[in-house]
Image (cartoon, rainbow, N blue to C red):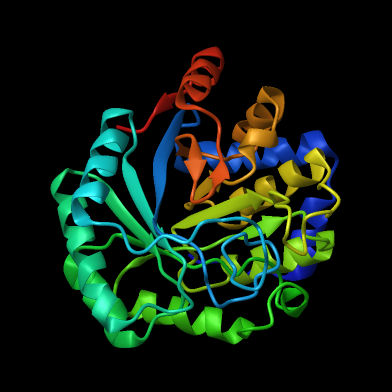
Length: 312
């Protein structure tokens, strides 16, 4: 039976002694997943830069001077080659991101071709393209899309401090279009943007109370990019990051909770704590869209040390 969480319940969990919170998350984790198996995804930027949105954390925004080179939509053969490399290195899901406010119908057909070709390789598919209209979500479903990523980023209360070019409700509308089309939802947020613990808790309660909750919840640590308004943001306390991830596991027990952006700045010990707290998905590869990510060889060594294996 589905549970409706309250903010006060979630706050009580978040504020447990650290070992009690992680223990609770680990118990929930083991009820629904093998805790020694990690789902591995690869993320490819299929169209980079000059996005008209003003997301304060994003180097791809046209509002900021970050030195990022603009690139048009990739060719199909390039995407197929990247997907083949992802499959060969152990990924089970291939994610494609395009720096659009919303895709034009003229471009969506090409993206659908990419989805269909990647599916033929036996990979799960995910795209993040910005806001969608209902007919666009239906078109992606017909192409065989498994997941659509559209993060809420933070709490509804803090959202306007981060983004002004679209409303929080716009995010929710796109998520509903995705759900109505029968596509699984990938939706999470970014920690370390100046938000409070209450903002993090509020965001997770909102996600957990969706009907159904997202099948995938990426938890990102802010990568402070020079040239963006977040360039000098104070980093989140590592234990607060793990607390948030553990809370995500408890509130959404059946979701893939992904340890996403920011792993390049995390120690092996911090990542191990995240896995202990219920993270069971990562992005693999040396780049996440435009940001650095640990080299695959480093992840392989960490998995070996922790006795973890990739989902087959």
